[in-house]
Length: 150
Image (cartoon, rainbow, N blue to C red; front, side, top):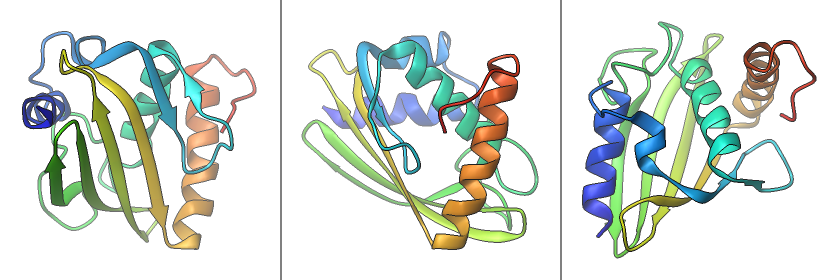
Protein backbone atom coordinates (compact mmCIF):
# COMPACT_ATOMS: atom_id res chain seq x y z
CA UNK A 1 0.00 0.00 0.00
CA UNK A 2 2.77 2.48 0.91
CA UNK A 3 4.66 1.97 -2.36
CA UNK A 4 2.28 4.09 -4.42
CA UNK A 5 2.24 6.84 -1.78
CA UNK A 6 6.04 6.99 -1.78
CA UNK A 7 6.13 7.06 -5.59
CA UNK A 8 3.80 10.08 -5.40
CA UNK A 9 5.98 11.66 -2.67
CA UNK A 10 9.04 11.40 -4.94
CA UNK A 11 7.03 12.84 -7.84
CA UNK A 12 6.06 15.76 -5.59
CA UNK A 13 9.71 16.41 -4.71
CA UNK A 14 10.54 16.49 -8.42
CA UNK A 15 7.69 18.97 -8.99
CA UNK A 16 5.76 16.41 -11.03
CA UNK A 17 2.69 15.78 -8.84
CA UNK A 18 -0.30 17.86 -9.80
CA UNK A 19 -1.89 19.12 -6.60
CA UNK A 20 1.33 18.65 -4.62
CA UNK A 21 0.97 18.33 -0.86
CA UNK A 22 -2.80 18.93 -1.07
CA UNK A 23 -3.00 15.71 -3.08
CA UNK A 24 -0.68 13.74 -0.75
CA UNK A 25 -1.81 14.71 2.75
CA UNK A 26 -4.93 13.58 4.60
CA UNK A 27 -6.92 16.37 6.25
CA UNK A 28 -6.13 14.93 9.70
CA UNK A 29 -2.40 14.48 9.01
CA UNK A 30 -0.03 14.77 11.98
CA UNK A 31 3.49 16.15 11.63
CA UNK A 32 6.22 15.30 14.14
CA UNK A 33 9.11 17.76 13.98
CA UNK A 34 12.62 16.93 15.19
CA UNK A 35 12.55 20.32 16.93
CA UNK A 36 9.03 20.94 18.23
CA UNK A 37 7.89 18.98 21.29
CA UNK A 38 4.20 18.72 20.42
CA UNK A 39 2.80 17.03 17.30
CA UNK A 40 1.43 19.45 14.72
CA UNK A 41 -2.15 18.53 13.76
CA UNK A 42 -3.81 19.03 10.39
CA UNK A 43 -3.05 19.34 6.70
CA UNK A 44 -2.35 23.09 6.66
CA UNK A 45 0.28 23.07 9.43
CA UNK A 46 1.85 19.91 7.98
CA UNK A 47 2.07 21.61 4.57
CA UNK A 48 3.70 24.62 6.21
CA UNK A 49 6.35 22.53 7.97
CA UNK A 50 7.08 20.35 4.93
CA UNK A 51 7.37 23.41 2.68
CA UNK A 52 9.72 25.10 5.16
CA UNK A 53 11.77 21.89 5.41
CA UNK A 54 12.02 21.73 1.62
CA UNK A 55 13.46 25.22 1.59
CA UNK A 56 15.74 24.55 4.58
CA UNK A 57 16.96 20.99 3.94
CA UNK A 58 17.53 21.26 0.20
CA UNK A 59 21.23 21.43 0.84
CA UNK A 60 23.69 24.22 0.41
CA UNK A 61 22.70 24.34 -3.28
CA UNK A 62 19.06 25.34 -2.67
CA UNK A 63 15.61 23.96 -1.90
CA UNK A 64 14.52 20.34 -2.34
CA UNK A 65 11.75 21.27 -4.79
CA UNK A 66 12.36 20.00 -8.34
CA UNK A 67 15.36 17.89 -7.49
CA UNK A 68 14.72 16.00 -4.28
CA UNK A 69 16.27 12.59 -4.45
CA UNK A 70 18.99 13.57 -6.89
CA UNK A 71 22.61 12.97 -6.02
CA UNK A 72 25.49 15.35 -5.62
CA UNK A 73 27.37 16.93 -2.77
CA UNK A 74 25.24 19.20 -0.62
CA UNK A 75 21.97 18.20 -2.26
CA UNK A 76 19.08 16.53 -0.48
CA UNK A 77 18.87 12.87 -1.46
CA UNK A 78 17.29 9.73 -0.13
CA UNK A 79 19.89 7.02 0.37
CA UNK A 80 17.69 4.19 1.72
CA UNK A 81 14.03 3.22 1.74
CA UNK A 82 12.22 0.63 3.84
CA UNK A 83 8.60 0.08 2.85
CA UNK A 84 6.16 -2.22 4.63
CA UNK A 85 2.38 -2.25 4.79
CA UNK A 86 1.17 1.30 5.44
CA UNK A 87 4.57 2.68 6.54
CA UNK A 88 7.85 3.84 5.07
CA UNK A 89 11.20 4.92 6.48
CA UNK A 90 13.25 7.04 4.10
CA UNK A 91 16.81 7.89 5.12
CA UNK A 92 18.16 11.14 3.71
CA UNK A 93 21.40 13.08 3.53
CA UNK A 94 22.02 16.73 2.78
CA UNK A 95 24.05 19.65 4.08
CA UNK A 96 23.05 22.90 5.72
CA UNK A 97 25.43 25.74 6.42
CA UNK A 98 28.32 23.48 5.47
CA UNK A 99 27.26 20.86 8.04
CA UNK A 100 26.38 17.25 7.22
CA UNK A 101 22.74 16.40 7.93
CA UNK A 102 21.49 12.81 8.15
CA UNK A 103 17.87 12.00 8.89
CA UNK A 104 14.85 9.78 8.49
CA UNK A 105 11.36 10.53 7.28
CA UNK A 106 8.83 8.09 8.72
CA UNK A 107 5.63 8.19 6.70
CA UNK A 108 2.34 6.37 7.34
CA UNK A 109 -0.63 6.39 4.98
CA UNK A 110 -4.31 5.50 5.24
CA UNK A 111 -6.29 3.08 3.03
CA UNK A 112 -6.74 5.83 0.40
CA UNK A 113 -2.96 6.30 0.15
CA UNK A 114 -3.04 9.73 1.83
CA UNK A 115 -0.29 10.54 4.32
CA UNK A 116 -1.71 10.57 7.87
CA UNK A 117 1.58 10.78 9.76
CA UNK A 118 4.92 12.35 8.84
CA UNK A 119 7.77 12.18 11.35
CA UNK A 120 11.25 13.64 10.82
CA UNK A 121 14.32 12.61 12.79
CA UNK A 122 17.70 14.36 12.31
CA UNK A 123 21.27 13.83 13.45
CA UNK A 124 23.96 14.86 14.47
CA UNK A 125 23.39 17.43 17.21
CA UNK A 126 25.14 20.24 15.28
CA UNK A 127 22.73 19.61 12.40
CA UNK A 128 19.71 19.71 14.71
CA UNK A 129 20.78 23.06 16.15
CA UNK A 130 21.42 24.54 12.70
CA UNK A 131 18.20 23.17 11.21
CA UNK A 132 16.27 24.52 14.21
CA UNK A 133 17.57 28.04 13.60
CA UNK A 134 16.97 27.84 9.84
CA UNK A 135 13.47 26.36 10.20
CA UNK A 136 12.49 29.02 12.73
CA UNK A 137 13.58 31.76 10.34
CA UNK A 138 11.89 30.09 7.34
CA UNK A 139 8.60 29.55 9.20
CA UNK A 140 8.59 33.16 10.38
CA UNK A 141 9.18 34.31 6.81
CA UNK A 142 6.43 32.04 5.44
CA UNK A 143 3.99 33.22 8.12
CA UNK A 144 4.65 36.85 7.32
CA UNK A 145 7.09 37.59 10.12
CA UNK A 146 5.00 36.16 12.95
CA UNK A 147 6.77 34.23 15.69
CA UNK A 148 7.25 30.67 14.42
CA UNK A 149 6.64 27.52 16.43
CA UNK A 150 9.92 25.83 15.48
